[in-house]
Length: 41
Picture 1: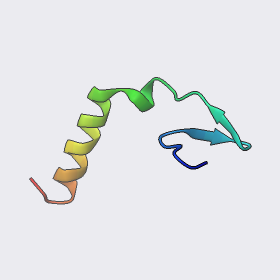
Picture 2 (picture 1 turned 45 degrees about the vertical axis):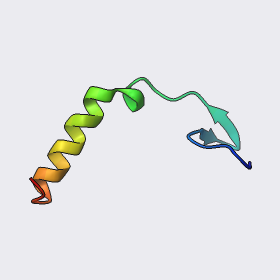
Picture 3 (picture 1 turned 90 degrees about the horizontal axis):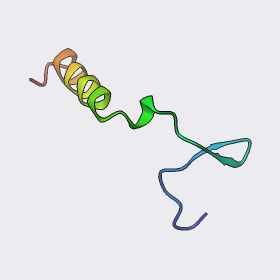
């Protein structure tokens, strides 16, 4: 496993990442909302 990063595994086998997991816009919205809820604006 040396050098393996960013890979999702199920039952010890690599699995493709879902589309929502790589959605940059969704990630930004989640980050912004999390910062707001944590009072980090």
